[in-house]
Image (tube, rainbow, N blue to C red):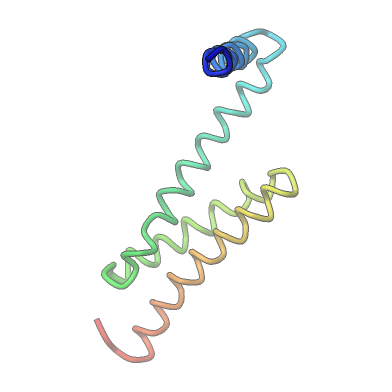
Length: 111
């Protein structure tokens, strides 16, 4: 019984410390980093979130998504090595899919 009460209380305390740390002057660089990260992660999710609909997108939409992938690459290259490896691979897969759909439409002439 006591273990069930301690775990949630500990989690809440750690969460409160994390929030307080981001708001303190010493946590200011971490807050700036978190805000900067929100920008590229939101764009990453917006761009790669459309892969399931790639076949139903227009050619102009696909070209736009490829351009957005290319614009997002520098932000991902600035990440730490392990995260860079994961996100760069995922971004490449998204970009390659959009490029493949465009190329297959141009080669086959299908809408």
